Each structure stands twice: as structure tokens, then as C-alpha cells.
Length: 61
Length: 406
Ligand SMILES: Cc1cc2nc3c(=O)[nH]c(=O)nc-3n(C[C@H](O)[C@H](O)[C@H](O)COP(=O)(O)OP(=O)(O)OC[C@H]3O[C@@H](n4cnc5c(N)ncnc54)[C@H](O)[C@@H]3O)c2cc1C
Image (tube, rainbow over all chains, first blue to last red; front, side, top):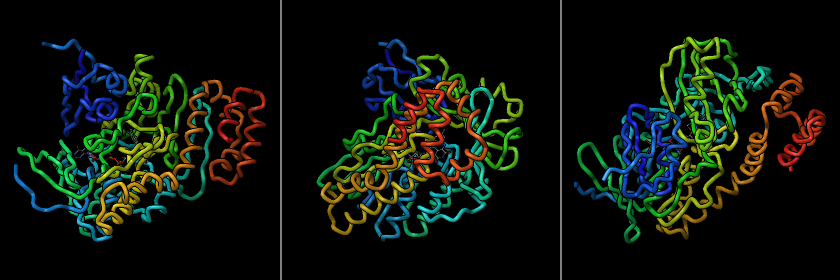
């Protein structure tokens, strides 16, 4: 599983960036970048997101 | 990649209240300082309800200016789940609701006039320490530039990565962070515009509260902060709680939304270590936020200012190792540590109140008593007395209150 961001829902607040224990998420202006190699699928970003824009999805090969 | 020849004394990451206050102080001390921010407009988008109490105006020597201090606040109203409220209102103002982007621009102009350089649309993507110099890789428009400094002050907010790039972990955890969501609404009514309003209760905002912070006639920040782990348990996120509450408020539900804001709030107490070689951390990045109400504008500025004062010592001594910078965390805890401890206790107290407890408190405290609590005219022992009398029927509350006052 890997964290995914839904850019339609996202408010670009960076709460997921600060909570990510492995610094796998970066906020740039109005874009969220997720480093899938770093992501440990802990789901913290999904829990803190105020607007439900984060989810854990099956990693595509 | 274009090389920048200059080696700055200090580069500040982030032009929020922490970074701008640090920039002002460093420029006053004649340091060669650069402030970088990824945003294209200072102060936008805000992650904030914009309330700032008078004490911070005094501490930071700010004079309220109607251009950015847009609404006088004379008190607070605490709303229990059953609709009863406790109003604590004074005759004079106790603070302001700001127009934060104007406020931050005011700080930025002051910093620049004093000699600080500010660059926007500069996203720091990498930081490295080599032979006592920090090199930052920065995305600028369509290319990457390098900037060099003898030290960095990380004022990059809740989503701070710059300190983490330099080996100091500023990450938040779910237990100690709130998830926040807010609308700036207009054409709304039904609340006293002189007061901040806070709504409590497990159905309203588990481990947190909903707020209305008035901002000019019929316009206000209407928002919520809840424990970051709550949505996993209740399957409702911050936006969900706020939307369903607004729907039930006659004065709000037909209002218009003129801004959507969101953000995490680090409410678990300051980072234990906020300095390293060539690095200091201030503001949200160092978790400098009041654990009870989540306010962080004032304390971010105070933290930024202290970081700058310590940095100036490093500039003077030409020593940027933790030998000089290492006093910062200690000085910060001397300044704010004790207050933090009592505030963390009160937070603990609030977290343990049930809906019944809130209702009971709202019903049993009289207007007069509330005013005295609000304007600070009761001594600590008088407060204990008052609460003990009130709470005698509620043994659980007494136990919690004891924890709070000890
Ligand atoms: C919903 C909500 C309501 C709030 N209400 C209040 C309130 O009423 N009163 C109050 O006092 N506080 C409130 N707060 C808290 C307050 O907003 C923060 O504590 C305050 O903004 C912290 O200031 P700062 O300078 O540390 O960080 P910020 O204001 O977040 O500034 C950080 C800056 O760093 C920049 N940055 C980050 N990473 C990079 C990078 N890699 N490269 C370049 N730039 C970068 C960002 O763009 C940003 O401008 C609220 C917070 C939230 C979320």
C-alpha cells in the first residue's frame, strides 16, 4: 500500500507533510508530491487530513 | 544551476510570523540575512483564525494598526453542548482579530526596510552542511539555484522539512497534533461580534472545539480543530464536523464562504531540541503553539526573535556550532517552559471533560464569576475555591481540577 493524494479535495495545508514520519511528502505551492519509495504505509497522513484528500492504495508495479 | 557567490550570515526558511520576526531582529543587528519562501504571496493562503491577544502586542512591541488589526475583541463566550454559554467580557479590548496577510506584509516591509532580503517562489528542496557552511538547493521558477549561509533558521511551519534535511527531527505525531479546517464566511449573524466564540462537546468537536472569530461586520473565521487521530475512530474528518455543525446554525447556514483554510496544529508542547550545528528552529516548526487554544502567531514571533538574538551572538563570535547556538533551546524553555507545563495540564483537563461536564459548568458558573475568571482578577487559591464549590457534586471534575492546579 502507498499514500495517494486527491488533488480535487486537497486544501494544500501541509498537515500530512508534518505528520509523515519518514518525510515522504512534500508540499509545493498547490501540489503534493509523495515519494512512493520512502512511504511506509503507516496511514498517519490519511488520519490527520482535514478534508479526506489522502488515502492508502495498492501500489502499482 | 547558477552559482550564488554570496555566503549569507543567516538564511531564514519561511516568511511566516516566526521567519519575519527573526528577519527583523537579525537585520536590526546588521547581519546579512536572506528570507526564502515558496509562496507567491506573503501570508496567503493563511492557515489561521487570526486571533492575537494584547499580551503579544506588548511582548513584540507592536501597535495595532487598523490596516491589519481589523476587529477589536473584548471577551470570549464558551458554549456548552446543551446550548448554554459562559460569557467573559470586559469593557476594554483584550486583543484583535487580524487580517493576517496584511499583518505579515507589514512585518515583511519592516524587515526589508531594515536590510533583510526576501525572495518568494523559492522552494527549498535540499539542505546540506559542509565545512561549516549550509548549502540550500532551491527551486526557482524553472531551474534550481544554490544558496549558501553560515547558518539556517528553520521557520518553515507545521510542514517543516528544512530542519529534517539537516538531521533534526521536527516531525509531528498524531497524539499531539490537531487537524484544523476553516471557512472565512460573510453575510452571517447571530453572535456577539465583540467576542471570540468557542463551542465544545463530543458531537461538536471531539478533543477540540469549533470557533467563530469575528472579522468586520457580518464576516468571521468559522473553523474547527480536532484531535488528529479522531477521524480514524469516528470516520468523520474536520471538514465533516464543521460542515454538519454550520448546517444547524440559523445565522450561519445561509452565509457565503469567501476563503477555505486548513492546517495541522502542533499542540503537544515544544520540541525538546531546537538547535544543532548551523541550525535553529522557531515557530510551528519547533511546535511553539499554545496547547489549549492552538494559538501560535505570537509565540512564533517570540521564538523567531529569540532565535535571531542567539544567531547574532553566533555572527559576532563567528562560531556557528552548537557551542554558541546550543544555548537557544535552554533559553527558550527558561522563557516559556513553565507556562507550557501548566497549559499542558489544562489541556489534559479539557480532554477529560464529557458533554455532561461542560453542560454542568456552563449552568453553574455565574456571569460575575465568569467575568472574574476571564479578566484574571481571581487569585489562584480563589479559583481553586470557586471551582471546588462548583464541582463538589462532581467528584470526577474535582480530581481533574486538582491535576490542573497542582
Ligand atoms: C486552522 C488554524 C487556525 C489557527 N488559528 C490561530 C489563531 O487564531 N491565532 C493564532 O495565534 N494562531 C492560530 N493558528 C496557528 C498559527 O497559524 C501558526 O502557529 C503560525 O502561523 C505559525 O507561524 P510560523 O511562522 O511558524 O509558520 P507559518 O505561518 O506556517 O509559515 C511558514 C512558512 O514557511 C514556508 N515554507 C515551508 N516550507 C518551505 C520550503 N521548503 N521552502 C520555502 N518556504 C517554505 C511556508 O510557505 C510558510 O510561508 C491556527 C492554525 C490553524 C491551522
